[in-house]
Image 1 (tube, one colour):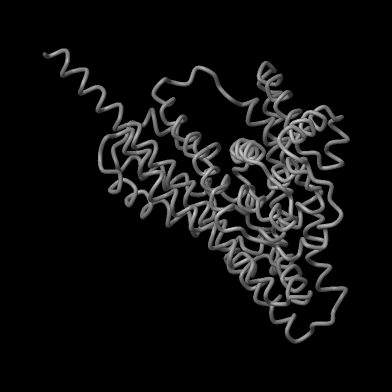
Image 2: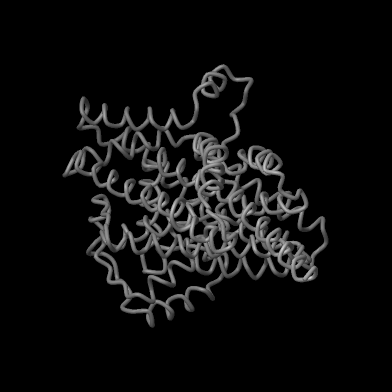
Amino acid sequence: MLEPVNPKSPLANALNRVPFILQIILGLIMGVILALIYPNDHAIIPMLGTLFVKALKAVAPLLVFVLVAAAIARHQSGTKANIRPIIMLYFVSMLISASLALFMSYTFPSHFAILEQFDDTLSTPQGVGEVLSNFVNQAVENPFTALMNGNYIAILIWAIGLGLAFRAAHDNTKRVLEDLAQSVSAVVRMVIRFAPLGVMGLVYNSTTQPGGFANLLNYVHVVVVLVATMLLIAFVFNAILVFAVTRENPYPLIFKTTAKSGITAFFTRSSAANLPVNMALCEEMKLPKETYSISIPLGCSINMSGAGVTIVIMTMAAVNTLGIHTDVWSALLMCIVSVLCACGSSGVAGGSLMLIPLACSIFGIPNDVAMQVVGIGFIIGVIQDSTETALNSCTDVLFTAAACRRAERLEKLAAAKQSA
């Protein structure tokens, strides 16, 4: 969730009274209007979009590094056994979500016209063997060089290694790492505060290029694919998972969590901001406090099915546009990476978008091109990010409730056997 800007400033007070999602919508509308009435500006207005993308490009590598390292370093061992089924549901759901997103990308391929200019400049991998070879070669790059060049594979490997090493460090050292992660996240929030202007510049640039408003229709297509995929996960695949765990009709739980958690999260666009709502809902459902007090904050950090969907579909749209050949194994590797990425995307507005370059790098797509995809993500984020957050947040409660009902069912079965 974006923090309010300095409340002492009159301009800040005015901005804080306008919901951020509305500011994005206004920026999008202004971009279209300016493209219609002033189509020949090739300096100031497009520069707003360019500067926004460059700022994201500058901060994204460091963000990935510190978020992953801090998340691993603060992990606490000895978690109670009754949390394990919930964690399993989280990860199974994310794998299913990424796989479904991949299927939807092949069935309903999206294209981004703005990326076609890069089509002839890329050297793309041929098959999973070359993908894995590139993966290993990138993984051993110097960490400082990786941060400068946006080599997300090496960044991820170094973050995991340092995160594991920091688990044995003093608590004060871990706190410094956590403070660093929060500080970088704050810088990202500052950059994203300029998203309305950035979106205005990006939309203006898209609509004044050859193809005009047809470019925006491509964004409508990818939005429909994203939302349809998330709805299938929420009401079909999550229902199957809950039924498999509880052996009960899953839809009363799904409708309750969607109505009381998902709708709120849709408008706040922040899983963290929706934490109190989820905790209150768990209390209302009379779930064990010792379970939901752990699983709900944990889900806010690692249960990111919607983020996995966004990363896969946006990456595959770039792959389709650039004409990159992908075999099944390379695509599955990208799905696994997307699930891992999703676990590190929490707590930052647009976090899933910021991790798209890592998935793109698997297919040899350079950082410059990948950040164009991130820019498109902010244009469609008005719908995409809201739906993604709603899916992530309501499934935290859904899977917690399902695991608790499973535990109750097993206890009753055990009691019945003993009495018999």
